[in-house]
Structures are given as structure tokens and as C-alpha cells.
Figure 1 (tube, rainbow, N blue to C red):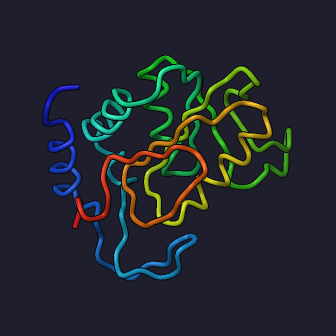
Figure 2 (figure 1 turned 60 degrees about the horizontal axis):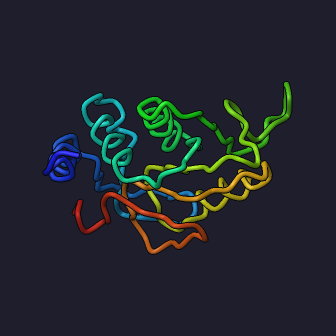
Length: 170
């Protein structure tokens, strides 16, 4: 990865205004006076490419598929899986109540798979933990997680790395 890609990415994220100073309700962490809107960056192809290129250059060897959930994880997982030529696992937040009644769409991991989970923001870690729990039902091994911004002090039971922390952005 070229020197400075992280700095260029940070500059772009600030330029497009991903930190929004407004009162919001977070999924698992209560109320906050600001929001980290990484999903906004997905609307800028160059920025999404910077994010996926950075993660691509840092992931562990042996990953066979990339998993994401929700609006924050699925676009990022798709970009990374495409760049690496890996299978894409789409994890639902709720089990589908029609059709096949499943938790996972796209590629269904097997016991021989090693999964990379990606997401946009980590605050408490509960969203990622839920994804990992669902993926473990397949018998596959979740070996790593990559997050764009670590907002809070949430901890998860698998190795989890991040590009930026909150201090980088504010």
C-alpha cells in the first residue's frame, strides 16, 4: 500500500463530513451528540476504494470469504470481496420470515472456511458479536474483524482491528 493512503483517506472522510454533530440514538449505546456516518463515504467511489484497499493490504492470510451485515457492513464486504476475489457472505440482522427463512444470503460458509468480518463503526461491539454468533452456526472459523472507525471501547472475542479511532476524526 502506498505511503500516505491512511492520511489521504482521513482527509477525504473529513472533507465529506462523516462526523455529524447532532443528537442521535445509537443502536446499542444510547444517545449521543454526534454520529459517525461512514455509510456516507460509500457514496464516493474513491473513498470506498481507499477503505477497501487499505483493509485488503492488512488482512490475515488464509481468509476464504468476507462477511458483512447491515448498511454499514455489506457495501464494504462487497468491495473487499470483489477486490480479493473472495466469496461474499451477507448476514441478516433478523432471520428472514419468508422464502427460505435464513440468516445468511450469498455464499454460505462451510467448516473449511476462514471468515473476515467487516463493519463501518464499532461502539459496543454487540453488532459484530451478533454477526460472529450467526457465522459460527455454519461451523466456519471467524478469524478476524476489520472496522473503519472504532468509536467506543467495545470488545469482541475475535481479533479486531480498525483503521481509525474516534480521536482521529474529531
